[in-house]
Image 1 (tube, rainbow, N blue to C red):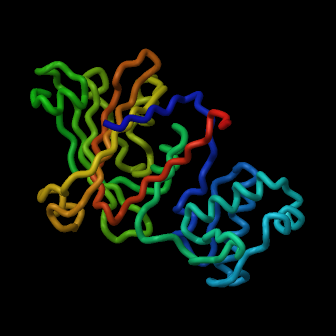
Image 2 (image 1 turned 135 degrees about the vertical axis):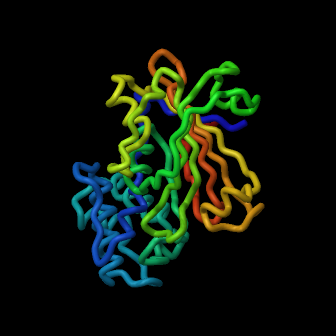
Length: 274
């Protein structure tokens, strides 16, 4: 089992949201972004405006430092955002070449800190399907939710959509522990995370998210909902949301058709080589 925890005090790099490339003719990032994000946005705009057409090379890091009056680390991080978005490719001895003016059709999620979950939900919208209470008795579900058999949890089912895909990018089941099962789901705000609704309505605070990713075959009943082929490759992302006392507040099971979702992480070296 692969498990990642993102603490609310963890410090990591920000990543340019893929949604900035979904609107034409020009696109914008959220306000108050770090300096490298502003530089990345400018480069995105210049590529999309035709200043740097596909096949051409953008200025070198040294030239960009001079143009923007920025440090090399800031420029390097800005270019890195374009690489992650699939807009440019770096080649030794050649430079940084423009590969595309838009991202791939699949959704790319970059996760480095808890706030990136907010960015993921800001990039996408929820289509609510159902809201019911269920008694947790299935051993697999008991294991996922860490519930005792017989507990009654709130179950919310929805589809998640991205601006760059006509079909849903995933099917999601959310299980909310009994203390919060009276949650009033705000369907009028499809970009608000479920855990944010819990925080606002109950005064709870999410401190950590534990994530498990595994490959699977797409179940037939979900395939119909997301308009995909049954038993085709899929990714299952199970996220468990913990409060400051280490108690599970919410568990979400997200199943993505493999060709509509990319998950990206950045690992920084924490030791010195000899």
